[in-house]
Image 1 (spheres, rainbow, N blue to C red):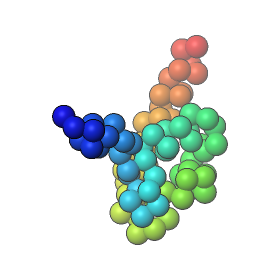
Image 2 (image 1 turned 135 degrees about the horizontal axis):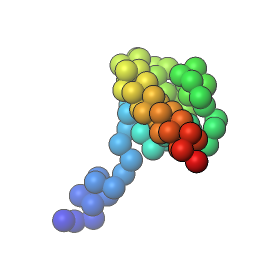
Image 3 (image 1 turned 135 degrees about the vertical axis):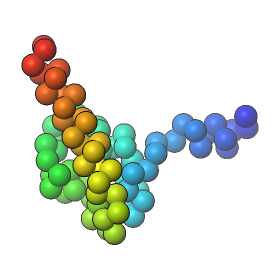
Length: 76
């Protein structure tokens, strides 16, 4: 595997192509407490403010991360 192929595998996957927002950025935004709902996530990252095609995926990631946080809060 050459360097370009390795970089392609390691770079964060973009969920929102219009605003170049990665899944990692979305999850980090929620984990850090900067966003706890979709509107806040849009304001912080600008995700899903272009064409809107990514909204379903962004919401799925957000809900997954919020569920993880809720589980860790209730078990800890």
